[in-house]
Image (cartoon, protein in one colour):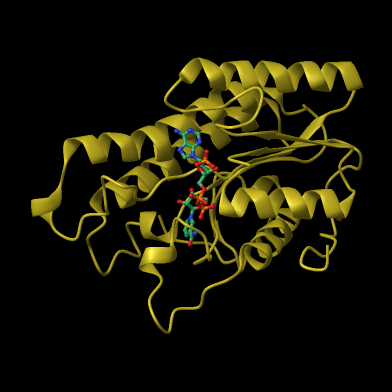
Length: 246
Ligand SMILES: NC(=O)c1ccc[n+]([C@@H]2O[C@H](COP(=O)([O-])OP(=O)(O)OC[C@H]3O[C@@H](n4cnc5c(N)ncnc54)[C@H](OP(=O)(O)O)[C@@H]3O)[C@@H](O)[C@H]2O)c1
């Protein structure tokens, strides 16, 4: 466990349930390891395409079924769901690479970008955010990306990924406003993990760019989540706790 030092939670009630979605990914795996090592949460539920129950954005009913599963677990144990981390995401695969130019825009790649980076997380917000408790701090955090910032876009390119993450940021803002009306201590945010050494970023990590290990990036992000409170809900934060422009 040396790579996963105890994440110190100061702000979050003890002994609740934490949920990691996309738990089999590079960053999701490290989040789970940190949360287990911290012993702050009584239970850590993990959902992904290869877990039971499965959670696959190409099968929307699986999202509702996993939220139902989490709700039952919370009811059976009498514990509150305090932390939900969405570490799902998609950049490239065997068929598609991010676009370097307008000429490369492909409707199938664009649709997949929106399905996994925006519509899937919207379904998570729909089904999981209502499970957060009315009282005490609780968090829904989804992994966005700085390249989804329109204000920070200086290089262009990566049309589908950038646009889908910008859409995700808007969905986070809407959810934060709606949930905050009835659950005033909920923190609903988009996080930028930095460049992290995973299969998603590997082919694109440029020389000279600071690359964090998944353990380092998730320790940083958990520390940010610990620092945030309801007044920050609806925001877009980097792993170093700076607020990012939309
Ligand atoms: N790595 C970076 O440098 C970096 C930088 C900025 C932002 N991010 C963001 O951080 C998040 C996590 O990235 P990562 O680097 O950990 O990537 P990763 O290792 O590729 O993990 C991606 C996760 O998304 C899941 N996923 C893919 N398609 C899915 C679907 N149809 N339904 C449900 N889950 C699906 C994967 O499931 P399987 O395990 O089943 O494939 C995996 O758990 C992403 O949102 C990414 O955009 C990463």
